[in-house]
Length: 126
Image 1 (cartoon, one colour):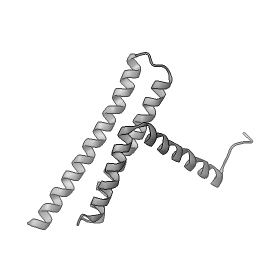
Image 2 (cartoon, helix red, strand yellow):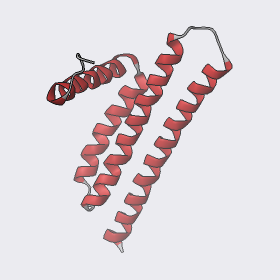
Image 3 (cartoon, helix red, strand yellow):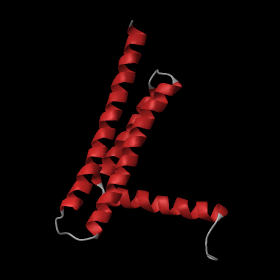
Image 4 (cartoon, helix red, strand yellow):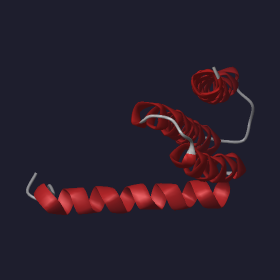
């Protein structure tokens, strides 16, 4: 394997591939765009909320999780679609499971936001 890239060059190449992945998701996936914009707005709100650092990290991290899962779901859908447009049970299951993962991450993020906001409300108004 004489052509194997190592060290800083490998890290640089990996960053480029990641950037291409973000660009592809932004260009082709409406859900990714919506969740990214929501995460950016949510991050600003989390930074401004009068809560501790850990709570801020939980709020922002829960939204990052949604984006990560959406990227993985989009990758699954792209691979399934690459192998043909005809319907197959396993293709449908793969897409449905990816969608279920996105839903769970969204519900988790919502639960984190509700819990932090309720705790913050009680702390400041009790």
